[in-house]
Length: 372
Length: 88
Image (cartoon, rainbow over the protein chains, first blue to last red):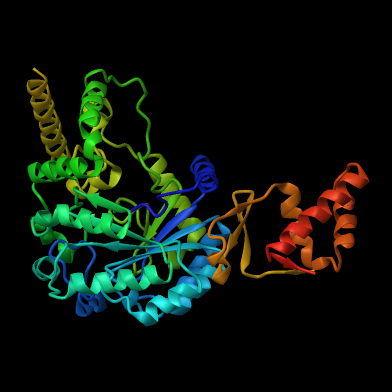
């Protein structure tokens, strides 16, 4: 999960400098694992009983105390996520205190609980962005995937309330077998509302014991490749043909020129951190290879441990040499979540990427036949 | 002189940044990156009663042509005042 997307030039410079100096410029806090919906594929959700057996939620004052520590260490961007953050009992005072500390806060939400009260509260000191996951384009899809037969209607109401108050909204969409049929309409909804959308075709297998079985609800590698291809067709429109030609040309001429380097391939653990609802801090929500209790150890020690671990981690050497990496989204989290080890090749991703390349090549053959 | 507390000064790895919060975001929802002198001025706003005090404070810290320093500091403070970041 990247809390620092869509940066302006000043912000990009701040983040690039943070990368070089290992400053934890951005963080994610999972406030709670509870949610008012029960999406089949969810990696985070716990029932209240499951949560209470596992660990209690931290109260908002405890989070503010940790926030003061990471602000001192240089954190500027913060993403509040869950579960559903608007279910968190102390969301209002917590948000206000985080803003007073000079944090730029974004919120991940399913959007179904956003009413006038929440929208008015946010409008007083707007977050950088509310990222709403759009799970479908109809109440029927929300019923099938999320167990909420009014979900789509509720989300649209929430989005309108935010937009009426000039609060920035972005859609995220995770494709599953239960909403793939809505892909076009999901994209149309975003276009109609002029809201940027990011569609995810790859889904990490859940790493929490209570949700591991939910991996069965993600797309197969072949289906995910098709979903990626279709989404890019929709997104790129007329430019898709050029994109296919360019991508395949780059692929055919590619050879690795860089030496293998240790470390993660993204910002996680380098300038970004993640904290679970129970206070377990890691580089990313899916990297379970180094977890530190931030409430016990304090932020500075936790960050130094995680950053040091990440710096010395070895992602798969085969992936570094692989030509398909041009199209592959492999990261440390995917390696760990798929295989349990950071240095092991996640076969699901290989298969997904191979299918995707086949689809590009098939499309290219179609274009060539047409030209003849 | 008074700082508008809705603008929060942050030190990110040695770089001074000013983050707008609260309702000032309606007019400006971005970041303000400062150079060393601007950060120095911001840090000392509330210690100075008047813009002239600030000119003296800056002159005590930095070397340079007194007239240039005075002109630039006063202009900078006036800009901050106009956009509501400080009051005097």
